[in-house]
Image (cartoon, rainbow, N blue to C red):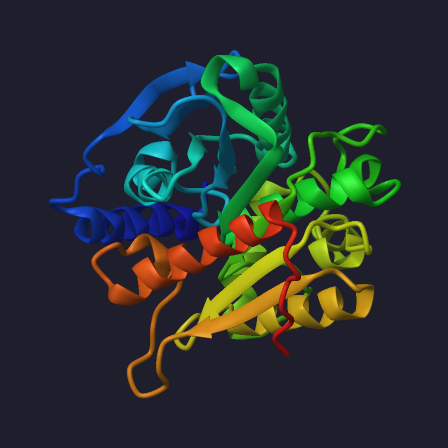
Amino acid sequence: MSQIIDQIRREYGQQDSLRDAGLSRPAGIESFEDIAYGSGGDQVLDVYRPGDARGKLPVIVSVHGGAWVYGDKNRYQYYTSSLADRGFAVVNYSYRLAPEYRFPAALEDTLRVFAWVREHAEEYGFDLDALFAVGDSAGAHLLGLYCAACTCRGAAENMGIGGSAPGPLPRGVALACGFYRPRMSEEKETSTEMEIFREMLPWPLDAQSLARVDVLRYITPEFPPTFAFTSTGDFLKAQTLELQTVLKAQGVPHVVRCYGEEENPLGHVFQCSLRNPYAGGCNDDQCAFFRSLMASKDVLWMN
């Protein structure tokens, strides 16, 4: 394992521990924890529901970020339970990380989780007609690939996850501070990404291999309605703008927002920093977007 991956895991862990110190889940949230969706120790999930809710609820599947090499459901428990507190059932899962498990392991786990949601809808009160998903950073990449595999002919086979389209397809997605299009480059700012892809991908690191995991090349008009957001201080901001261009060109209903102020930049995946007032507003906006789809309201376009 490279020093870069060791460094990411150490630094991200320190940052997240500081971010979440003293936090607790909202009062009244009912949780079902450490449910196996596969045979591996990393293949576990939690389900959160408002404790006073009865019957079926709209459901959100959360795909965590962490540069494909870091993170788990425990790091996302406060963010995802805050979404449940807004009236949703939420599925918060861990997936197998690179480089111990090379691609497409994390994507295969995402397929397993969506299949698990469909299979256990009655047991946990999931309304599959109101199935949504959120993903940030590397999680937005994995969620984008999943949706593309469901909607773009030949994409699943090209990604290495079989020849048939998976399912179920979310009715809408929220993609946060995401990474969508890897590129071969010698530029300093992409060297870390290339080092990760070198250890993550099962194919030689070249332009053809990177194209196989390029979300933007697979987007068709059938891609789910998308709420995409970034922030003034997000180092992946340009990727969200590229996503916006492709969504518009393909006619995919979408909203794109940039949060924060230029004089006081807001950082990457800020929506998980629950003490930040921008996080609460953004998370309200994500849930409002999903509710607008449930109500069949027109989705606003923001250029």
